[in-house]
Image (cartoon, rainbow, N blue to C red; front, top):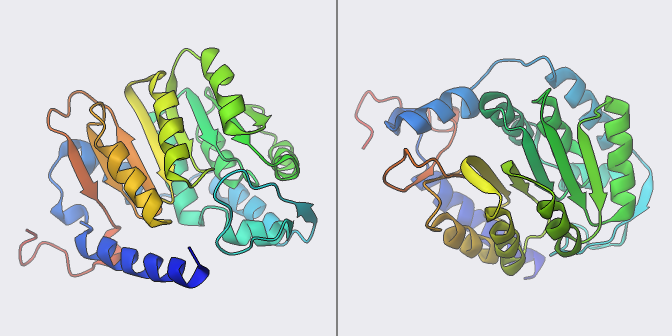
Length: 280
């Protein structure tokens, strides 16, 4: 897909998402209401945010040059092999609000074993790790030089509960899973190809239990990723899927008797949906 085609797809997909997205005033499911209250609409300033934001700022101003090895679909913005760290931080890292959603999920659901596929510079990783004091984060990055920057990030933050593995997901993930009892939270953000994303989800399913959470980044990144998201959220074990545009979130809670698929947006983006005139 050309860059122009990508932006056209992105724009049309964003419009469709906005039209169908519901706010907290449209939701009645207790489980989803709980997610909205403690993750999506939680406005508290957590203890870790200032330090996490300082690290983001440092990476956004890091003028070092590294050689990038793309093992997945690559970048839509910059296909060059030599890139500035600050450019990677600006174009490839999760936004501040999206990264904070990851932190809040960890705070609220308290997963003990967290797996991340796609470390990049480590911004999402430190948000996952900062949310837990007793949990462990295992993160895999395919590019050695990018992984080296991420490791420096973890060292600077003093985060000893992060375990970084370097190599292709297809090679590193299977033996890692073999040595794991279970997966409480999985964040897939490394290979935006439909077949690859589906394969990694299938591998992780072997260690997923009823309280697990799977988060998939950039579900609207391309038509291929949208197809992948549609297939994955219809898996028989998935009881609830939540589309937040940048993130797709899957829950496996059997108490959710009827499978649900919900598209959510913070209420601030639809201020007219305040329930005064009905919200059907």
